[in-house]
Amino acid sequence: MQRVVLHVDMDSFFAAIEERENPGLRGKAVVVCMLSGRSELSGSVSTCNYLARESGIKSGMPCSRAKKLNPDAVFLPVRKDFYKSVSDRVMEILRSYADSGESGDAFEQVSIDEAFLEVTERVGGDFGRAFELGMKIKEDVREKERLTCSVGIGPNKLISKMCSSAKKPDGITMVKPEDISGFLQPLKLTKLWGIGDVTAEKLQEMGVSTVGDLAEYDVIGLISVFGKNRGTWLKQASAGIDDSPVKEREGSEQIGRIATLPEDTLDPEMIYPLVDRLVEDVIAKLDARGLVFRVVTLTAINSNFRTHTKSRTLNHPVSDREILRQTAREILVEFLSESPVELRRVGVRVGGLQKRTGQTSLFDYGA
Ligand code: TTP
Ligand code: MG
Image 1 (cartoon, helix red, strand yellow):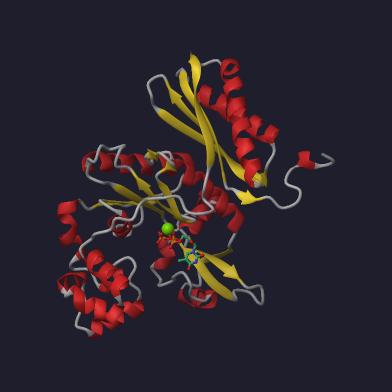
Image 2: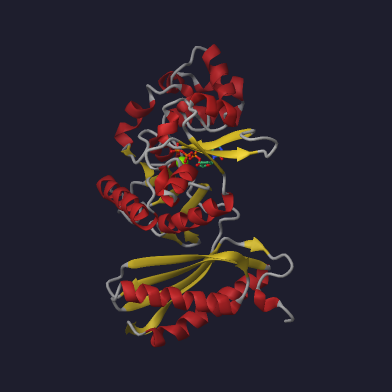
């Protein structure tokens, strides 16, 4: 089957969250700063909204310089923990659209605001369906989190990653296998994902300035300059070839269990015993590995075989069975009231995993 991979990147993520939280910021240039605390505006720009970008403000530049470029911009300090909790919820939404493989979801969070989703199975290798799915994901994120994202769709990670930044903000870009060379060839080398300034400069000296030039360059010549691995990679990437799998990164792992109800039902009392059993299994796995969790996700597959997930992020990482049981039950009740279709299968999953250190929950007191 034709492989289809999606890459999703949130638009001006930290700044967009601040705008969402404070409607008074609408229509203003917003700059989020990592302040060093030495003096007012000593520090660098974490990100800014698209309006601020119009005055030339960019991530990484000193905040004082940003202030000079646009004195009317609103400068806000980063609130990393808060953005992380929003990110956790966004990632849960995105994850729910990824294929589920033998060893878990075919989902890879790349940073706080971007992720790859393998969707080959879900769309049956069809790019038309993949485009519809991309639109649906954008709608879902907008509806649930009031944030926009940009989506790239391609036959592998390399192409989908490059597509998602082709139209920003709020864009969707698709490159099918037959369109790869047309998409890649005119691009400047630094636009090829994985090529930095140093490699680009070296290639420039060799007379290579576009991805198309690189695709035509003799692989032996590339290997003699860059070594076997890097030389081969350059040649393949220039042709848009990338076989790397979409897979969970360390630290973004999830632990979960899913099981079928004795009969399809809408009655929480009938579902609780199964939820409790799943919770026991998840807790046993966490205990065995000495982990705490911060995100609880309930998966519900209804009698029409539609899968829904709903998550909640806790204030602190915990390892407690009661908290997991209560949270899973609450999410279930919430879910049933919003979507009254009989359930067939139910899953409980935890994420935001960390190694346990000392006291992890109220219930650990005196235990
Ligand atoms: P990006 O996705 O690179 O940037 P962005 O989401 O703000 O804007 P875009 O629409 O272009 O995707 O990074 C995600 C978040 O990571 C960003 O909102 C803030 C943070 N970040 C930093 O703190 N420092 C940096 O230098 C960069 C690039 C990002
Ligand atoms: Mg982004």
